[in-house]
Amino acid sequence: MGAAGQTWTTLDKLRRTHRNMFQRLEPDLYGIGSAPQFAIGQRALLIRTPHGNVLWDCISLLDDATIDIITALGGLQAIAISHPHFYTTMLEWARVFNVPVHLHAANRAWVMRTDPAIRFWEGETHDLLPGLRLTRLGGHFAGSTVLTWDAGADGRGALLSGDMPQVVADRRYVSFMRSYPNLIPLPATEVARIAGVLAGLRFDRIYAGFWDAHVREDAQVAVQRSAARYVAWSQGDAGA
Image (cartoon, rainbow, N blue to C red):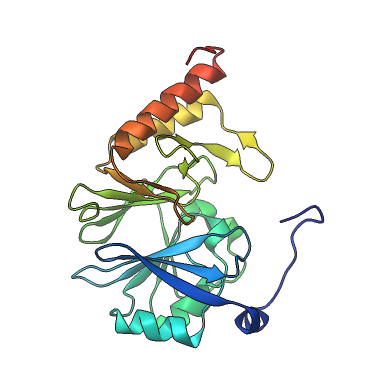
């Protein structure tokens, strides 16, 4: 998005100008992103588990090389997406790999193309596969979701997010926003609620929706530290 607002393209056009890159982030976790940078530079994550592989979030470009690489890594068992900004070509991915796409029902209105592959889940948590759980946070979107991966970070647990929470430049902190393009913050009460939900999850590492947007260790501490600072500033405590 630029000064003129959003512009649109097609998957066929994107295939002519872009390619996908893969990066191994840790054992059984791969980042997938497009080059040159497309849209806001987001990337997806591929998690490998003994029970099948999961694609977390979705990027727009799906080409033959990407299909070949993911197939060689074991294919997909499911796709799960954090929030509507990552919906993009989710149905093309679902059809190629013949898997369901798991979305929170609170974001149903943002789905522009209906398909039997879409599985809406309700409530606060949803067990995707053994060791992989979806949790609704809300905030950025009503159905904004995170994924906890028990085996991540050498068994200490990893949190996979999209934009909620978002890892900032100082990797000791995260932030919480209603709208990033418009710089609209969330109220302190909502941030405190989200921090409370995250406090109940087990993780020591965070992978947000962009390359290098990672908190490598003590991520639970970073989340609670960040939420406390946010709430204090919102309430006028400039010393926080």
